[in-house]
Structures are given as structure tokens and as C-alpha cells.
Image 1 (cartoon, rainbow, N blue to C red):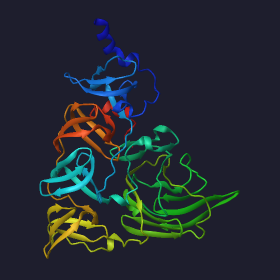
Image 2 (image 1 turned 120 degrees about the horizontal axis):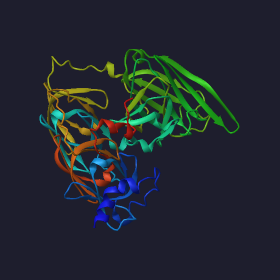
Image 3 (image 1 turned 45 degrees about the vertical axis):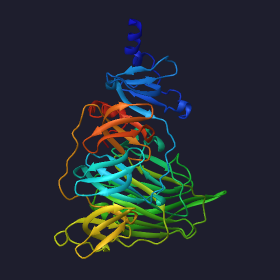
Length: 461
């Protein structure tokens, strides 16, 4: 018996010495989700999560073990879980709710009042979030979203040093010169948007419609180069044995010299060869490729940083585009707060409605303005301003974990119990909830231990 206890205590330092373990098998095997534990001493152990015992230890099973072993959570850095099929949502919209602690929840907006925001989710049922812990709410049309993230660093390809890019707080961060890319299949007309943050001076490139994610110099792509307020669009192409490179156009954008964070939006028509660039909702430039058929373009999206010019990329979204360019957001007349009181709702077409919100029934929100009563379909909304009132952050608890959703976003909660296919937790933000385990790509432990942050590859940019 003493020998068995000694084995369980010493196991992480005895059998976990390999840095690159073999990938676990199919997640359908035995109807159990497979994964890998990463320990604070950099050891790894593949296997299956089996729950939490009465002492609060994680029960873990590996193929070479006769029975699950207990592992203290204090020794675990993170648990990575293999992918599984997500249920396809048939709702008309998806709501992205940003919380005051940096978490992001996804679901369908089900209710909104002075005290709570309620999201209907497949992974946690109805989540009733305290309004004081909700910072921002964005509505996306589900059928119009091809990609929304970033959700996991593993789904991106890094060109350069592996530690050049990290994922933290829902943002891709570059600490040195390197590229990062992801393939996102898009139709002939597409809308690509993202938030870009930098410090002091902007030096940055973004590649559109690239045919190769392994290099920052692909044969075919549109390459937007940003050097402070000056930007230019270059096309590179190869057709059979011929090819070339040319400047499609350039622009001088004041916001890139005056700010340190903006939202980029590209409206791309492959057939017509047009690329429209919007900055913070304002049309900055529309370029036209005179020979769009030259070249064999792909679906890779790249972000490329330069040495000594750190950047962050967040709130990436790719969707189909119907072909009509939007009007400038700045041209939309917004009611002044001192004149009109109430909830500010920005619609997909740029219009703004301010009033008292009511119930949501069948995907339609009742709103009473100063002048009339109206009903607005939730999928016609773009954002709902939650900035009125006081904010607060949930109290940090021992045993909190940070769980990353496969579809994008993260949730922080105290982990109370664990089974083969579900886990239960508690947060001041939404109370007690049972989550589907297959909704998460990884769980981070000991998240308030600053000494372990460097091991998560999510260092401060």
C-alpha cells in the first residue's frame, strides 16, 4: 500500500518527462473526451478526465494505469481537451457579451433588463449575467458569420519564432517580428474586420486572400502595409510561370497616427477586384485591382508584426458581404445623452435607437422611446451600450479556473465538481451553472499565480 501511495505522489515527476507526447486517440473512443494535462514543471500526461474526488483532487486516467489517479490541482497548469463536434445553431443571431473581468460569453440574447443580461447557450443553458458585470454587448447574425475569434492559439500558424505570438484575454499579441495566419474559407464577396492595438507608432502588415499560411511572403495575396498614418496596398501574384508585384493604391489615414487602437474593416470583392478599407466605421479608401483574375488566391488571413513594434489583434470576424458598402458611422446622427435618456442600441444599418428596453419574445426586443413604441428583431442590432450605471468585477476565488470555449471566448469560475462529460462551477457573475465539457478546448488552473503566466505562453505584450 505504501508503494502505491508513493507512486501517486511521485507520478508527475516520474512518467511525464516527454515534452511532445503522442496525440491521444479519437474523442469518440469510449464516449469519453480525451486530453492532455500540462504541469507547472512542464511535464505532460495524456489521458481522460474522470472527475474530482472528495479531497478536491482531479481524477485522471491514462492507458498505462489500471485505475484513475488523483492529481492535486495546485500542480496543474492547464488541461487541453480534444475537439468534438459542436451543435449547429439554427438561431438568427449570436450575442457576444464582454464581461468586466475580460471574459467573453457567446449565445443568443434571451432577455435584457436593469439587473441582468440573459444568454441562451447550448453549453450552459440559460446564463443570467449580472448587469453590473457586463461591459459590452455585440450582436452578430449567425448565418453571416464564417469565423469569430481568436479562440485558440493552436488553430493559427506562426511564421517565425513560436513564442513571438501569444493568446491572452481574447487577443493575439506579438512581442517581436513574426507572422501569424489562419485559413478561413470565404466567398467571392467577404467582410473581414478586427481590432488592432499598438503602442506609440504603428508598423504592421495584414495579408488578405493569401495562398500560403507558412510564409509572410506568399506568391499570391493582397498585402496592406501600415507605416504610422501612411498605408499602401500591394498585390503579389503568380500565374503559371509568370508573376509580378504592384502597388494597387495608397492612403493617408489620420487615425493611425492619432490613436493606439482602431477597428479595421475590409470589404472585398474578388471578382470585381475591389477592396474597401474602413477605420472605426469611416471609409478610408476604396482600391480597385485592374486585373483581378491574375493570380491564384487563397483564403489565408495573416497578421504580421515588426520587431520593436508590439501589436494586439482581437475581435476578429469574417462574414459574407452582399456588395453594398455601408455609410460612414460618423455621418449617422446620434442623439446626445443630455437630450435623450435610455438604452442606446446601434442597428446593423448604422441607425441608433435610444429608449427603455422591454421583453424579448420570439427574437424581437420591445423598445419604448421618447416618441413611440417599437419592436426590433435582435438580429437587426449591432451593439447594445451597457456603459450606464456602476461596474464591478467578481471576487477572485481559490479554485477558479479559466475555461476557453471552442467557438471563441472564455469563462472564469470556481470549479466545484467534474464528471466525464460535464462540470459544475460558480461565479458571482452568473451563479451556479453546469457546463458541457466538450464546449471547452482547455481549462487553465492556478490562474492568479503570476509566476506561472510565462509558462502559459501568454506573456504581456
